[in-house]
Length: 333
Image (cartoon, rainbow, N blue to C red; front, top):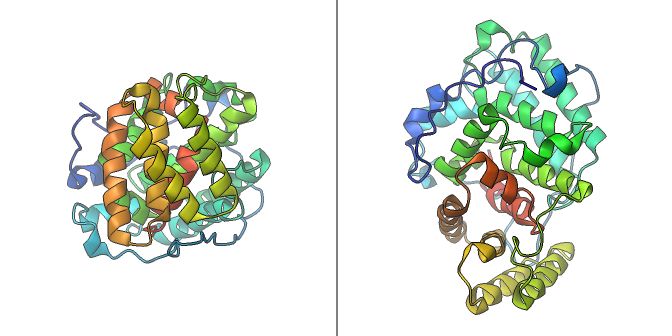
């Protein structure tokens, strides 16, 4: 089914090279800006529901607080005005979008990011924020160019909480208007800047991954590199470390895997990306974490450059997306 409204012109071009931040502000306008944002099968997003939930801040042993402030000056590639546009801190409805953003963020703070959030909870969160936005007339044809990244967040919420999750199996393969802006944010925008916008895009990708797991629609062991004993050992270690919230153990396991893995082909890419994400998560030094995340983003570009490849990466058995969310959210707005 086609989703209502125009997703906006993102100008993906070749995914090998990063586009400039300054070009993104205007391009992010108008994601499904019409009053009724359509869903597959002609459904409409309903208003109502309960506000989002507050949540505990997870601390990992041997790791700095994940809420460490990240100064604007430390994201040299980010254009200040572009960040304001993407964060929706400018414009006539900025206060409404700010409240909606906090509702969206709160839902991810009760559950560890590599664990599933109940579909009903995601749905209530989306509906309560959407009701607020619509009541302020912040989603009309006249506001089509306002807060594109917030509207993209709503689109992702609608899919992460969809009742018929089979649509998630090839979500980005079959829906270019959604894949294009998500790939642009994921591959071309500096991750520190994406985090500073405050929109929980990576957390939503992690939940889409979890919904696929609930369907049993994950990659086979070969695709995830889990036909290797070294990879299986690393997966067991990283899952145990995450369950114990032990950043030191996660970092140790990741470093050991990266130093011993004999392969460098695509079959080990998702494992290696997870190891890099774990190193970033556990690093107590913001600059070191930023450097690791930059390496990770460049590596991700070699693995994901299209909708089908993003679907494959979101079908992984590795806790990549949840770990990446925590590592990036230290710089969150």
